[in-house]
Length: 384
Image 1 (tube, rainbow, N blue to C red):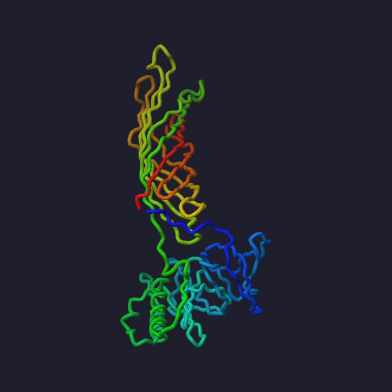
Image 2: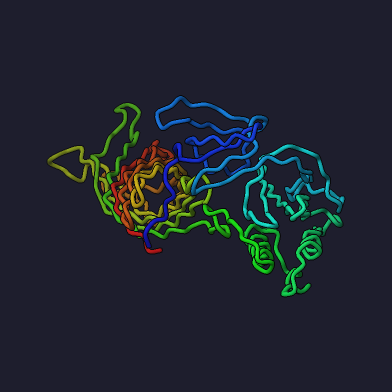
C-alpha cells in the first residue's frame, strides 16, 4: 500500500479574520497543530515577509485543505488526566479562558475541539449561539477504582432533538472526535442543515502502521585489547548479510512527520586476525551472530506525494545466538555485553525503502574491552 503523505510543513493558502471583521487572504504556516495554537505565522504573499498573529488580534483563521480555528471564550475543564494524579471530585473543574477552538463540524449545530497537552475537550455550539462544554472526566472514585463522569451523553441527548434519535444512540457514545462528529453530523442532516466538515482529518483518520521486510549488507568492525603491552588489536572490517522486519507507527499529527518504530534484525559475522603468516593458528577469531531488537523515533520530510526522506535514532539490544572467541585456536569464555545507540537516514519511494544505519560502539567482550560497531546498507519493502 503506498505511503500516505500530507505534505511538508510550509506556508499554504488560507485566510484570517481580524478584530475589525476584515478578511485577510494570506499564506499561513501549516504546522498541523497537535495542541490548539495561540499564535500563527503568515505571509501576505508567497515571497512576503513572515509575520505573527496572536489570539488577541485574530477572531478566526483557516488553512485551505487543513484546519480551521475560531476564537471563543469558553469554560475549560482543568482536572488532571494522569492516572496517578486523578482528582477524587466527580464534578468538572472549570476555568474561563479565551482560546482558539478547532472547527470540526460547522453547521446549525457546530462541534469544536480543544487539545492541551494530553487532554482533549469538545464543545457544542447550538443554533442560538450557546456553547456547551461537553463534560467527560475520569476521577478516583475509591482508592482502587477509577470512575467516569459521562455527562456529555446526557448533554447531547438533551440538545440534539431529532425524530430519528432515541436514548439508546447515546448510551455507548464515546468521548472521541469520531463519535461526536458522527452524531452531530447526523443531527444536522436530520434537520436539513448544511454542514462543513473538517476536511483535513474527517472523522479522525487513524494513525498508520507500516510493516517492512528489510535486507541489507552490513559492515562489521571490531577491536580487542588482548594484551595491554601490545595495545589494541583491530580486526579487518568484515561484511555480511542482515535481514529483518520493522514495524513503524506513524502519528496522524504534524503532517505524518513523526513516527515510532521497532525492528528485529538477524546478522552473523566471523572475524579473524592472524599474528603469524606462517602459523595461521597463532591469532584471534570471533564468531558472532545475533538478533538485534531495536526501538526508536523517526522524523520525515516529504518530497511530493510518493517520496519522503527520513532520519532515525534509537537504541538496540541484541539477543546473542553465538559468541565464540578463540585465541590461538583455544575457545575463551567471556560475558558478552549488550546494548547501544544507533542513527540512520534513508528515503522511501512508494513501497520501497533505502536506508543507511550506523550502530555506535558497544563493549562485546568484557575482559578484553572488545568493541563492536557496524554500518548497514539496507533496502526494504512495505507489506502493509
